[in-house]
Image (cartoon, rainbow, N blue to C red; front, side, top):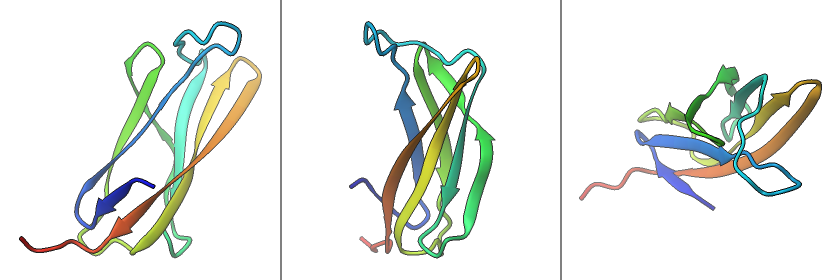
Length: 99
């Protein structure tokens, strides 16, 4: 599982591919992300994401310096025409260590 330290920026990213050819493609309607911390507090609600290049979508989320420790979870929400796909993801927030 990916880990981020408190105060670090979590890069929430995915690749969108055609299931028939596996070629990168961008959803035609929208792509958003929902995110909850380990205490079930929703941090992002249908937050728009950025298309970095064809089929590569991301959103940077700044985990606070006192962000809840433990497993955070969310969904990438992709809409292409009338087809909606929700892809779950998770990452762990760990205590920031002093050098």
